[in-house]
Image (cartoon, rainbow, N blue to C red; front, top):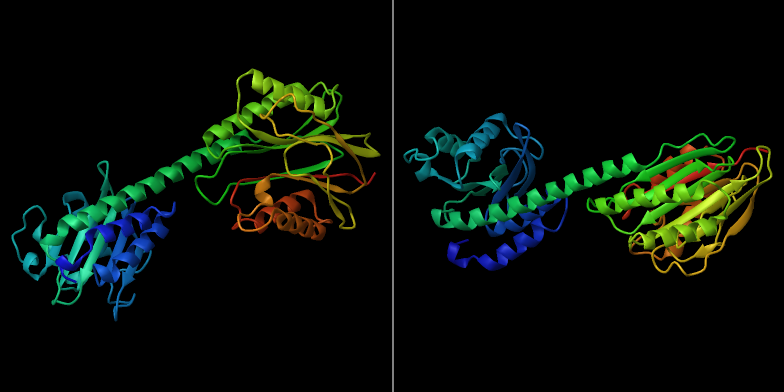
Length: 419
């Protein structure tokens, strides 16, 4: 392709869309390569700096050129000599045109041995190697190669390729910043989740799974503690939002709820109402869904669950024979809407050896399916896990959603004793 035939603006628009279409750098760079080949090059490769080395994350080829020995370096690894040359060039140069003429030209800013060796290793008529730089940091290299001498890459292409490299570097840097934010938020949220206490004779287990998308982490949590009279209290909740702010707000709500509930003299609905009024009175406007429950009864039973639900998915009761039922009573508005709205309690006898599952909406919600389907799926999964221990239940539910979760998932599973 001649330079005059190239649709600059159209190609730049496609490149920008491709490199910004995913929060995973490798995925975005593979899309970039598929756009540049064959429109700009016969083959291209993208390498990213990792520590003191380069990792090849993308290779694309057109026509008869396949991902074989004809291309220097497969996905994941580069030949040592190629890696060394690219790293040397990354430290010393902007975009570099490599051809038969330039390989034998005076060294200039780039040592002549680098030009000559790259020309031999690329085994091409012409190529442009452009660093991926942003804010003074070298992130990697973009290599574009034309094999046939009829339409070589020339110096006229250099400004355009440098623009491509700059846009690509910005996108890669953004994905890394997203990744750092996700890691920080995930660590913060894990640190805020409580260590489960001994609530004997109840058996207790929990689980947490961050969302697949790196920007999705935030306000899901579980909690369990004893009230002042020894009654076990159980909580599952979700503060609206998917960022570090939501995670910190979750901690505020959890701690305030513990303080309000601890004396155990009020029913769950009254405690929830006080929490709602306190949040509004303190100027906290974030929306929160929550279930607050307590397991009433002596060590030998009989037991009863008393709970209130502030706009949260209903707990699931699983009987020893695999029967399942959502506990829909006690439902009221989510926190943060209007503290004057009424709330009520639900109450349910708990059979010996039954299991309670509290969960956040990431376990049952999918963007492309009705909510009823997710609830049915959970009932079927739990019907098959009725005899499993509570930790296995949490592990299996999270494993079944590991590649599908579009939101965080928090889980709390409680097993009643034999009685």
